[in-house]
Amino acid sequence: MIILMKENSEKRHINNVLNFLKQKNVDVFCREDTGKSVILTKGNSYHIDTGMLRAMEGVLDVKRLSEPCHKVLRSEHPEDTVVRVGKAAAGGGSFMFIAGPCTIESEKQLNEVADEITDITDVLRGGAFKPRTSPYTFQGLGEEAIGYLTDLKESTGIPVVTEIMDTSQLDLFENVDMIQIGAKNMQNYELLKAVGRCDKPVLLKRGSTNTIQELLLSAEYIASEGNDQIILCERGIRSFETSTRCTLDISAVPVLKSKTHLPVIVDPSHATGNSKMVRPMALAAAVAGADGIMIEVHNRPWEALCDGVQSMTPDEYRKLVRAVKEILPYRYRY
Ligand code: PEP
Ligand code: MN
Image (cartoon, rainbow, N blue to C red; front, side, top):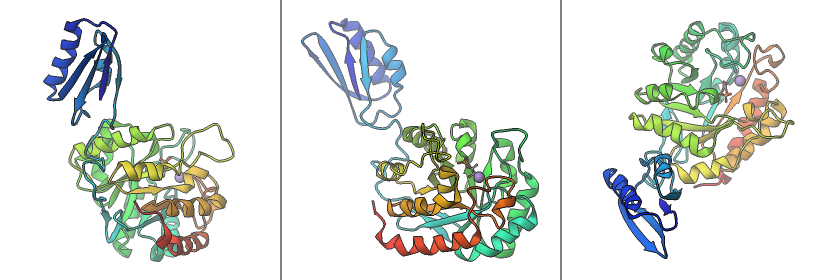
């Protein structure tokens, strides 16, 4: 971290900054030159609040040279973290296929989709609590749907993932294998802390208007509570482009893979909003070095209560899995 003092700043202002850093156990190097002082910190400074420093008298500017977190950073933990969900794994060379309906609409619908794809899927997804933009659209079956999902897990053995929306729902997730934090809750800090205290993998989706640094900090919230079983998911961000539901930030894969040891997967369904674009984007994600993909699949997309346009049929998904497996040996490795 570099702290640049204003020209001819008073000695007491410089000392105030030095004392502030000392109290935070940060070693400093201070150079006073031609009336402009520069303070450099040595070692970790992730716990320093740059806003507080900037507000101090005599401070002109503060620049961070590293991310304001540490547990999730590759610089602190060079080896890939491998997140295991049931027998499946993401990271460290393992690729995870997560698929299933956007929303669990009924036990029959869930089982029909599952029947067609469990043999080619590592983790089955299905929304029970749905964070819908409009309160008048289908909100999900809630607890009832979690029951269908865990029954399915018991009868087939496939691990399951579903989204939590509030800390009060945690008890219902006891038999769920992985807890999803959706894009809309990426910065729900109480929820992040609560799943951080759980002994279960967490699938953390990037908010559509959030930076990569904010995603890493949200993951740090989970990790700082003791849970480092975190999979990050790029799912498209808001841009000026209207041809797709969101803009898939495929470059988030190399950025994240270089910055963090956590596995990174891609959701091309919510990113594109169009089932015809899911295949090329899923292949791009695999080539870019993602550790998995999450795909929405519906047995009758034209009848889906949510996200039918972006849902693949089981047959389309099966062909996609085959194509991804073919290119996996050529994917970029970090
Ligand atoms: C989902 O995966 O079910 C979902 C709601 O996606 P997102 O949180 O990325 O919008
Ligand atoms: Mn969806």
